[in-house]
Image (cartoon, rainbow, N blue to C red; front, side, top):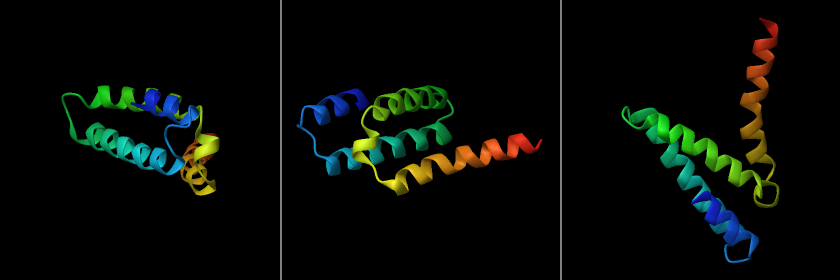
Length: 85
């Protein structure tokens, strides 16, 4: 789905607003299943990672500073904590 969304956006067949809406729904579904689906959770986690790779192609055009702040702050905190140990 992520690959199709990126294709449609690049070909001006999907608006930024629609892209963000679908992105949020897909991430929500994946996150829910990673946490709550014991049988297939690992597959949802792998799928979410692949999905993010596709989204990265256009995320600079689609998302605002708040998106990147929410995305990067946990990574920063994780690195900061790891470097103190």
